[in-house]
Length: 338
Image 1 (cartoon, rainbow, N blue to C red):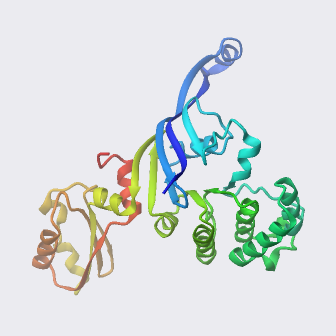
Image 2: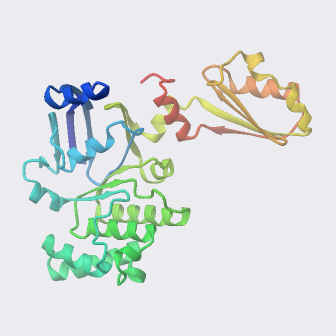
Image 3: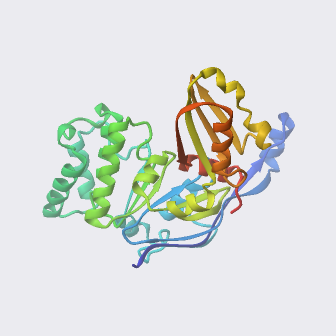
């Protein structure tokens, strides 16, 4: 399948003025400023296939937003190449933006005091969408995002969930080939989150829209993306599927069980027995319920179970694989090698 997005050795540097403390430092910064080069994005490369939903994740300050701004044409790279559908975003931004849709979290692109329907009518003229195509498009977006119940309301009266759906519809009005979604479910309740995810899946499946999704909600990643690119400190640290991520970095397991007698917790001395740090073995207790999270690179599952059964009487037990949140946390802390 052809690539819709091509990124090679993308780099972005910013000049930062370093100010010394005090009044003297302020005057010096004003008349003889000392500038330092800060590298926000450091040689990132990746490709995205046409029709793929890519999870693009990283901690705050990792460089995600800077990469997205370069891909959308807002920022110009210091060096490197990015091409979307064969176009370089910064070369012909006016025509390029007709091929992309962008939703930046809670920063709305809608007109605050206009009714939503009027907002879409304005966008229709901006993007020069023909009348027949506009009516077809609105019918599809109404079906997928369920806009009918609030389409006559002013944008300022919409709830956060309604406004997010309205923003996604606005970004899709001109049938873009690529959709950039930055935190599309932030601040939403569980039901609305699932509605947004269902809409993204349906748009991707029915229209083949390529999606780049940045999010801190790992449920978004697990439910929408087959592949993720993770960056940290401006560099790519992982590129692959969720199964690969769990296979390479998912050494942690959780052993959960229920004690017959809550007092028996005193008999369990996992750290003393296995000689492991808190990073490789941790214990949480709630009444008779106990959970042991442990690193399978350092201790075998059967050894944990054998020690537990020889120490206490239990009613029930369960072994669970690591959650993706734990994998990512360990990766960022450099507890695994990349």
